[in-house]
Image (cartoon, rainbow, N blue to C red; front, side, top):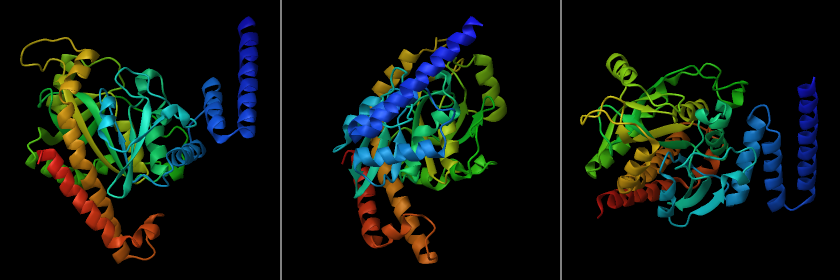
Length: 373
């Protein structure tokens, strides 16, 4: 009885606070209203993060950055957050400024997002991510990527740190397939605007895009491989040696991690291309040639710090190729059909050959950066 009364009091207090913050938000400037609405969500979170909340977040991204459309979004994994200083001309914002947006809390994940220009287009970068093991439902885990797609992103680049079996620490391994350790509800409340109910995951990891990036990266002598079969586990516990051995022997698993797959599936469901790579931060449990070694998050961050240069070179290679692929795809679509199906294609059509030329020059620039020439 007492607990019921307390719950009622706190629920009423939270609702009153939410109403006050939202009411103030309507009467104040945009710069103040947005943080107040975000605080209201923190006090009394919505039951789900659906299309309306995603649309509001996408609009906030446009307003904050002053950019109508980001063609590519990249999510940085554990230990990658500090590389954002590499991108010249990048604007920095707190993810907390976006309504409904969950903010990374795990050590090694940057809670900011960035917008920067490349070859006449705009790139969006999230400095970190959230995970299911932090207590977030999967509509929250996938929220940043979905919001970016609604804000114009057509290609999603995902990065992560993973335990490796076939390739040791410091290797950069592109994902070609995945395995799911436990069932998940990716779409708790189904909405066709976010993708089909029954999703075919066989084409999640875009083979054409991956092969182009891997080819150029290997020419640049980067330690890149394209045989990643990523096991997504909920975490935060690491895997046991017996589990790793069975998954590797029976199912061909080569990478073990706690992220990436939910975001990739959500992006694929919304029609975006997905490119993902893991930095092998440690040997998976039981696979260290030197013998048994305790797995810990500090080792992950240390390895990623040591491989920072190669990760940056790989990103410098990947971004121009992704832009090139988008532009060539639009040019082909415009030639083959009218009207174009993509909502932004008519706006892009008049740019035509200029974009193709610029993107190809950007790819050349990426290759020079990667080789140091």
